[in-house]
Length: 156
Image (tube, rainbow, N blue to C red; front, side, top):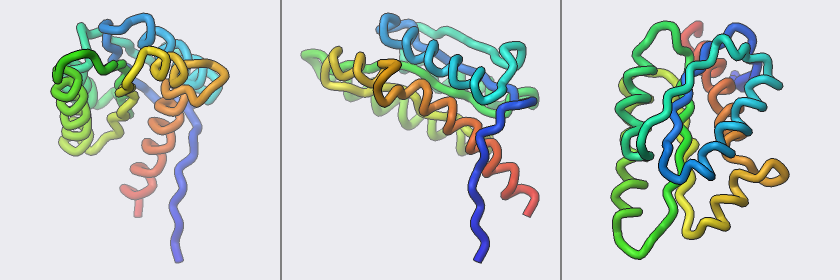
């Protein structure tokens, strides 16, 4: 039996990060945790490109363009969609999720879904808290692990 398990070594990896400005008080926290984790895992700050976009709906097209660059190994998408009083939440969350998945499938590169979709602001704060289950940190780990997994699959 063969088992492939990705490693989270960041040395030499080039990462793109697309961050939504909408709900910036949450997305800044996601970005901060993500960057700290990438640092911890050995990704040089010189190998990170951050692009801010207006909102989560605009993330996929930017992520796709970044992922198409040969100099980028993975793209991390960070946003926060918080349910309001209308159905707007549903369209934005679904559009972001589908678009991010499509960017990954189109390019064959990891395009990581780090977009919070929460019912309340409190839930978004909890998912971007340094002491909790920080989704920005999780996205950084996922990106590096998937770079390694896909690289190993290509060699087999």
